[in-house]
Length: 387
Image (tube, rainbow, N blue to C red; front, side):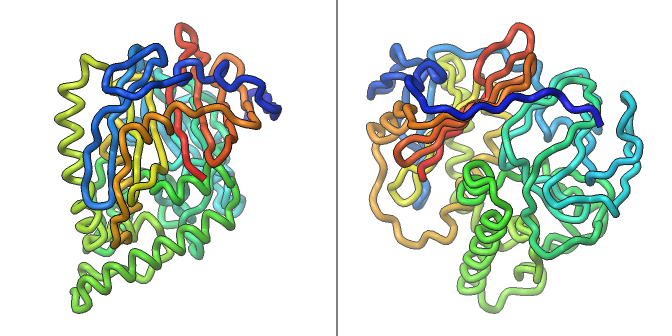
């Protein structure tokens, strides 16, 4: 399959602000300032705290197709590596040679006339194992098949449940593989891995560490559900599975996550509507009083598209947290968002398509995806994680 030329650079950072100009010197307060971003008063639910972020400027992002939209329309196809018919232009329905499948490689074809935006942490189910997207990237419109770097989030299975991948839940339902709730769920879109798993994917880039974190979270969730309802029925009990997606789609787990996610999801959806004119673009996230993550987008439109699965991923992080140990403050969230200067920078560049920058700082990492498509040149998504 034809690959685009990609350049990867790693170098010390003399001035990280040159890479993230909009994030310099952010001050406290609810109004945006010269930095371009400001943190607002938080929304809290149990041990989870979400701080809305507004921007002084946003960008037109309607040209980008999300993975959920691509799966729903059928314009995006993901298969195991080894497609036999993957060297011709669209429309393509690959014939998959399962014998050549590889754990950390998939093939993706974008048949849409729009460029496809992929975010690290998005989970696709099917094939021989469920996988999680390994990095933010942009796939060109009407693309040739691309080699998609992924990590497995289903240690143990290597038997095809379907030839193609899809949104979490829909693949299992279509193939009669129930997610522990009696035949699968018709999910609205892909699942986003919780921050602890997502961080292993993005920062560590190590399959062993991803598997270890998946097993850790599965075990913690199983213990929480069992202790909460020791006499639950077979329909609500956690299934004997190695699939991270199926565990998170289990009825009992979903109810636990909903307890945390729903109040914040509904409050923020209402808040976004009110803040659309003020350009709400993201969130800073705290768990048990400690700030752990932020997701910032180029537009309110993109934030709204990703918000339902992002809030569930944040909520999944706190389901097993039983003790609340203080509250994070607006000032702390503002400081977390402002500090982007690091010791080392790694740049991955696909000319004319995108640039991905990774900055390592004292106790954090920052990942920024910049679109290089015509009439863009802006950061589409920025993620920051605390080490």
